[in-house]
Image: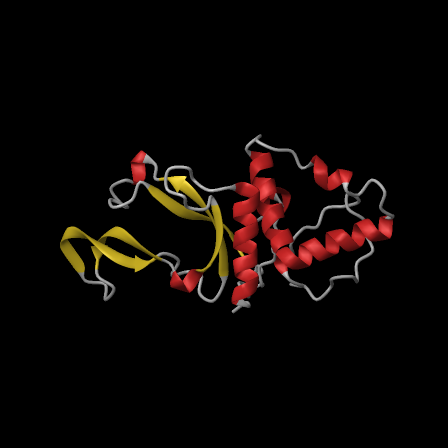
Length: 191
């Protein structure tokens, strides 16, 4: 678990940079410990697996599949289609990033990584641009730029491969294909 002061700092920066909901005063974005998050949800079965005759609203773990990690959440309105599942809420925090590796090993959240994730989300929605990240690099050497990219990758994903710093390819020079990838051409012979 991360230092609570670091999480408080990240959450304060998220409020200062991205604001709060004007109706409720809740932060738009927050970083939370997944194991502590509960929600009231309409369920059809008990934890033991016994099926109920009539669905009931129970408080359940929100992220039973994300144990031991931090999650960056965004406050959203509960869509009409989900109102039956979350009958006690009009707003809900939904996950936008789990701070972990592809092997689900926890990664400590940081402010620069959290900000980059939110900026990327807003850019994808057409609300902001990522140009500021490029502008910051205008007067940077290639080595400085590569170090900044490596630092950001490490903050977001940790060193999953053990190869961080051992590859010499620059961004844009190639595509990394996972070893588990099978191309359509390879699949034709297996049909």
